[in-house]
Image: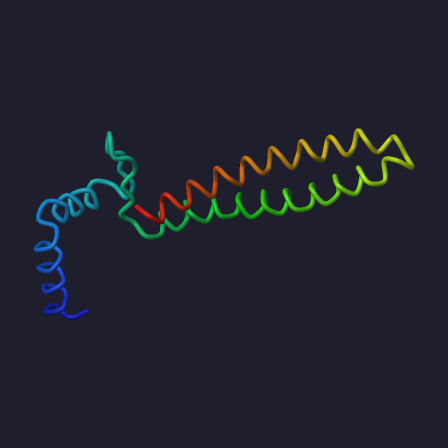
Length: 118
């Protein structure tokens, strides 16, 4: 980016956000991640933000796979429990795993969507 383009970008950002732009510059100089009371975390380093999102995304991906597979095997064990009653315990255990991983998936999804909106 040339000096003129960079200067123009700074002028436009300052004109659009006369309070927020200087505060964002200050936050960037203080720390890549800054906890602002009443506002939350302000992340000014793109790599740090990407790393945080990648960890949550991986957790969401794993919990989503667990939800799908545990529900599939739980349904199968419930269906075959009529011929083999010993499968009922495994079916309820898999149902519990499905519920717990579903709650984790919902929490991760809410967190990621809230971060992407704000």
